[in-house]
Length: 464
Image (cartoon, rainbow, N blue to C red; front, side, top):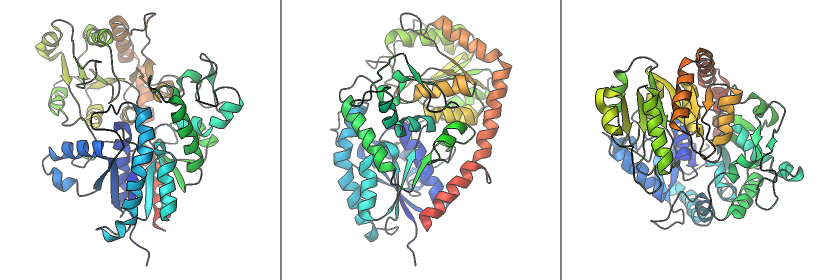
């Protein structure tokens, strides 16, 4: 008799990766799998601490077995330095994961039979799967278009679009299209060129190149997207299998992978008091940072719009960790309930609320999918990595949002913010397109939908 299916799920150690992969872990449990979820020690502690603050949190953590492995960084090091984190985890996580697999037969839940690894882990996770004789699946938690650029690295080098050594754009103002129907991308905004000013760009690029070779050998390459969102990309790159959009937060009472908990649920009561389609929701994910001037312009722009707004302001969103609001801002917005500022929100519930009219977003893929799933138009304000390509989808392909455009000094001004919000509020055609995307997204994950069928196909293959 074949052993009961036991999946080891391993995310890249960042918020936007842990959330969709933990949702995928829950979906596997729903289909009869035992699941072990291997976070970095740093992120494991944050997820467990966040869940433990919930009523019944300890019991909720039992549904998916959460384990910790070292990422190689010291406790006080900056884990926003993604280049260093990526290089170190290869050395430190691989042996612990291999040990975990080999010893799993002696633990509750039985031996691990398959691995679902974040594509961004590169070669080491899939190499471990092959050495231990278990099936391997790579999951890409962002858009298929960005994954397609990785799979096309060799062609981009041959066409003299990027440098063979570090992947840097050879034409800073150039654009590329991998096929005539795919979105046009700025060559300077290829994901590996937009991760900050850290050293080690060449090492990171070589890591990505090696990862392409490794992933070509795995059983499946899943993607947190859906056919209707990226038809041209899936047609051009049939190896990429869409299984999304993953729910990323709709499972109430289940561990969902947030680091910035506790969520401020008081904002839901505040939303209840607002008129339908009146609220500007503002959230920039877990990485975006502003300087003092841009932070203040955003605050004043929201106030100038005259619309009620819910703004998520992380403790570290301003460089230097000081929230230097404009004079009197908090007093003015609290008077009469004009606005609400929270440290973290239950975003999926917020975006699903009928009072929310538009979403000022950094265009992270989880946020993009959550906005799309709820039919909410965007003010698209990308920060780094894949977010620039996501902005192209939002504004140029799906036409469900407007760009936030900086002035000559590189600042997105309060007047521009207020004006764009007003444009979004007044654009009935954009609202209709957003509602259309919502219907397609929901249809894809229902029984009989393309993503639902793809997920079932992959599950059956892992059970075989």
